[in-house]
Length: 114
Length: 111
Image 1 (cartoon, rainbow over the protein chains, first blue to last red):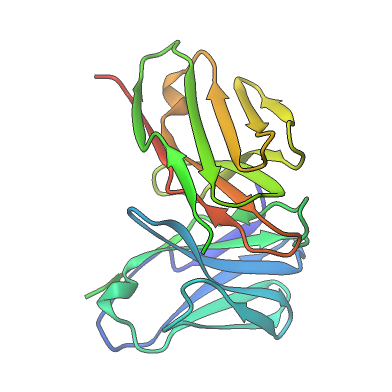
Image 2: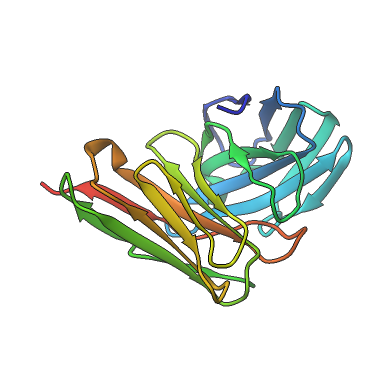
């Protein structure tokens, strides 16, 4: 299994509060990704990083920000959580982003916004 | 945007049966990946395909990259109870493009 951990694994918070989710990898992979998974939508890309301090938006980036100050850590922040952000969040990593590259996923964080 | 249609959405299996599922896209893909997700866990990569027509096996699982490059198929032979879960296809259109995921096929055991 790829060395990816996510914390916390579960979180319940209230609307309007800030939330930060952490992804940590021990594989020294260059690329890291944040996805959300919702029933009927599959996995959707929020943001990704292609190096320290280098990030870009994905398909559903509104309401989220990310930071990557070290190769091994990728943080996802909800500045002011809303109920529509209740979801399961997955971090993924990959060595490269070429056609022959594959992504490996962490165990997920279940976030509930009341 | 690009979309993947994965079918069937769900299916029931009896131990020993063969299972087939597929994904189709509206555009040409260069990469097809198949993942399995168990409850409460992240998706786990099963098979990766990089070339049109490619047929790759992983134990009882076999996946194919369609000749048209717009579809992919996953077959599970002689299913066992631990095969239950959700299977996702994912594809990438360009060299640096994002992965697009299907909505999943949920495999359950027949009551």
